[in-house]
Amino acid sequence: MITVFDDIQRLHNPPSFIVAGKAQPIPERPERIDILLEGVKSSGGVVVAPKSVGNETLSLVHDTRYLAFMDGLWQRWHRQPNAAEYPAPNIHALGRPSLAPVGYPDSVVGQCGYHLGDGSCPFMDKTWDAAKASAASAVHAARLIRDGERFVYALCRPPGHHAASDVAAGFCYINNSALAAEVLNRAGRRVAILDIDVHHGNGTEAIFYDRADVLTVSIHADPRRFYPFFWGYAEETGRGEGEGFNLNLPLPRGTRIDAYRTALAQALRRVGEFGPEILVVAAGLDISIDDPFQGFAIETKDFAVIGRDIADLKLPLLVVQEGGYPSPSLGANLASLLEGLRA
Image 1 (cartoon, rainbow, N blue to C red):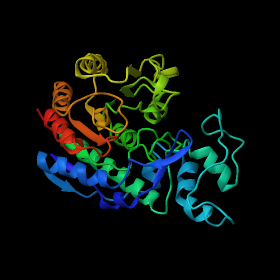
Image 2 (cartoon, rainbow, N blue to C red):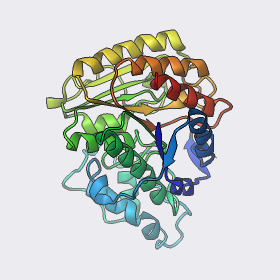
Image 3 (cartoon, rainbow, N blue to C red):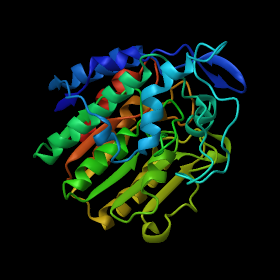
């Protein structure tokens, strides 16, 4: 197994995010990396660093205006008199269409309201550097798979699946899983994405929602009472050419392995029908019973079962790290999933 990871990812170290209107300690913090690396170590294989990527690559799935905003956000924000330490909108562009031809402000405050989708994407001086290093890990892993490797793990932090083409949200700034899939798609490979994070991969869904060339499947906690709330319903099946190429499988909070495997079997049947050459697994370990978000109740041993079910497809696997936050079992959960996927 090859693991791709860039140490620059540690530089993003926000103190808090907004929960129920209050600043709370953020679980998406650098110590996740060391716990995950312990899981990698117990699984064996080599760890390699990726080459950096620029906006030309990121623009495969992200709007160039969004990338320009992120490039200059920290400096522009701090040119304002009496600004808060960290960029944050005081107004949101609710209901605006993506890439609207009019109504885009010049003000950095207004642009924050356009591009920062919620209170869970804190931005610091090194956030964008870390996000680009995270994306580079996913891209490098995709290129390894493209060139013949059959199993690669991209340790991506910050995660990515809530980031849409021009919106950051939910700890996510660049959609690593979507970017990896698009790199493979541009190389002529037929690709499906299976998102097993406890939160719906709404950014990934949005990026591919009108397309039939990449299948997106997500198993997640029912959004009626769980983030991201507005996306992830079973009725979201794609639009236009993409109709039928998005599958959402929402499950109740507290779901355990038997019910989870029933949904996973449905997901894998749809993947099989699509006939991909490569499967991107958006690996959210926050389905764990020990995870701070307390969405599902998957135990450490269950991760190996999930991995083996996925491995039965006999496809090259690109595993992109999404959620999964500090807990006593986080490293062991990753090792268990990787063991199953290699079966």
